[in-house]
Amino acid sequence: MPITIRPVDCITDQHWQLLLAADPSQAMILRYLDQAHVFEAYREAHLCGLIALVEQNDKSH
Image (cartoon, rainbow, N blue to C red; front, side, top):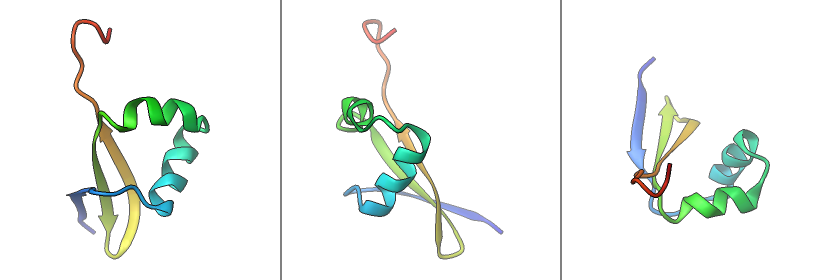
């Protein structure tokens, strides 16, 4: 079954459930979420993942 990935415009409660399952610190998530390009992954009609990409620069390392 193929996975469909699409951009996220607004973080929903369902997204938060996945984010908090991966990192239980909401404060830590909020530190990077505003800077992230967020995508959701669907298999059939079910949300199965969330991808948050943050650009790194020399000061981020």
